[in-house]
Amino acid sequence: MTLGHIDVIKRAVGLFGEVTVAVAHNPMKNPLFSVKERVGMLKRAIENIEGVSVVSFEGLVVDFARKNKASIVIRGLRMLSDFEYEFQMALTNRKLDDGVETIFLMPSESYSYVSSKLLKEAASLGADLSSFLPAFVETALKKKVKRAKK
Image 1 (cartoon, rainbow, N blue to C red):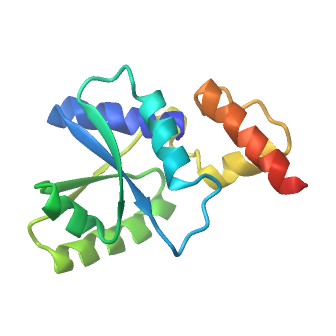
Image 2 (image 1 turned 45 degrees about the horizontal axis):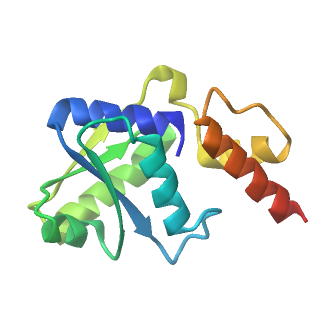
């Protein structure tokens, strides 16, 4: 949960009024934080933003959207390097369910280069990440990477 994520969430709420942030359980990835931990951090990070809820799900995002009567999936798009993957995913989702549309939102320029991989590496080297992460997320990240080093 970076400040870039929060920025995109705020932009989405400004456009749509209500947003559900859906945290995927993806068995193909090995995230540093569990789904439960990520949901908890997200809820804490957005607690002062009206119109946002956070849930977790398993399976396809289009199935989640259909089940929850959502017709739009919002994806953050930072750099051109994100575009190819995100575009492929959007087209695949459209093929799976053409009733679910993907909209890309860009974060503020000050967050457009931030990636979780980069922040994990910087955290492991003791960097100050306060301009990229909420303070409680920075603390949790540094504890996790410290344990992972042992």
